[in-house]
Length: 406
Image (tube, rainbow, N blue to C red; front, side, top):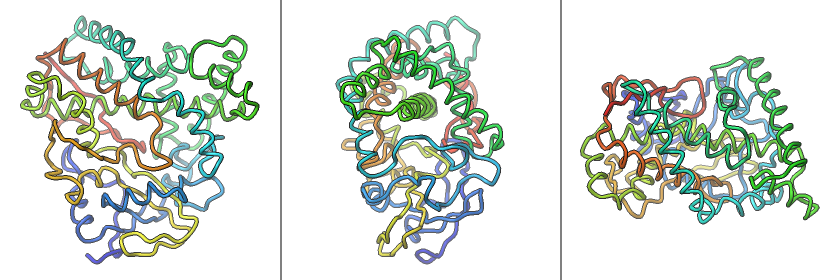
């Protein structure tokens, strides 16, 4: 395998639901810049090493592809949601000063301090969900009983959206993230419904403001005169709702599966709760199933990566799961070390486009561990790990269900 010469078809497959795809180590060692073939048939550059992924994600010149870019498409013709480059786009600026302005409006709200202030309400919701799970039948599906509803309640509370609409949110999120699960017509119908719903919600907040994020953003826009437009407010609400519940719900379930699949890990946490914070970040690093295609970047000018010049017009796929297992950046990367510190993983990206909601996600994951360890210390998988099924047809990675008993 020579550098730049190897071609891989995405998504890669793995032996077990929590295992990394076998080719990644060899790619990191011998071909850190490979060629990826997407389900659409388009191709792009595929980065697998930590330093290369961090370099590209930190480079402010490059961003996610826009509708104007002739970027590699993930989804086949006639399929794919917004996240896969199909369907309609969102009115969020993805690069330049417009994007930084948008981030500045949101970053004031998503500080670690503000997210920690939500901890008591999250904890109360988590206890309520555990009450319901314990009162129900056994085995239970931890994803349906806890992993999915917790972040839905949290993000709905933040946005001021009714959590009773969570089933609709789930469908819209899946269509947003679809690669092959839905047809183009289905994703476009879902997108129109989602836009209509969020447009009505923004109008409601404008008429009767609350203490939620949408109301705050509307008030700032009115006061500053250069805040978000209505289209940007709608798009922001949609993006936060998808990112705020779909990805976090998947991570809650994957983290629980990682810890429960090796009883020593769970017992170590039970014996030493001070490891909760570092365990959350180690689960984020250790996750071998972050997404099926990595994070896309579009090169508007030539870029040198791993000693190669990638020409302008190249679409690059950054595999954060692979980067997080790179032995050049982490000691014993295939070991889940609950006390690992420092832990500079790339799960939330890096640089000017890093995930705005990372403090929120960390807080929800910490609450998950605290409450499950307190309330269900005997929690265990109800099926062998090898029998767990991965989500397919979406750009995000996760498990369909996590049957548990106690």
